[in-house]
Length: 138
Image (cartoon, rainbow, N blue to C red; front, top):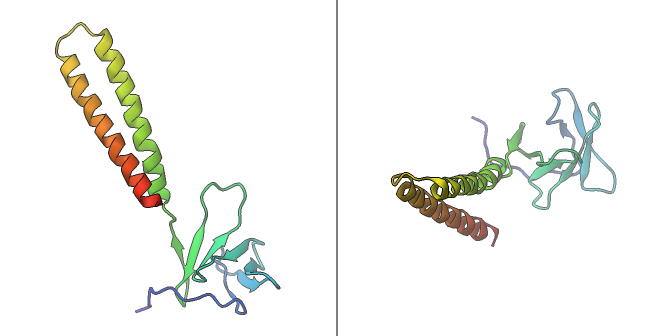
């Protein structure tokens, strides 16, 4: 069984390209970077020395890999967490606004208490998301 422990990347070695199976990463002189001989991508070794990052200007999220000793393993740098942390407050805020407008315009007696409860729950959830985001960043 292959080990999943990340190995430190040796800047004087060459590795297979994580993008293509036949490409090889070759060290770029006087830098902490590698270039692929097939796909022409450039990969920078991150400060920890265990991961590489593909340099792409038009991609909003970084592609990062770690070397297991035999192959590159994709590392997801909080992509799902970032998307959820952006979408959840937005959805809750939208829901709160819609319910507030509905509660103000409604003549029915039932929607106002339900709307108040949902607004309260939305505010509590937004507060928890805000606390979690600030706790993670500090």
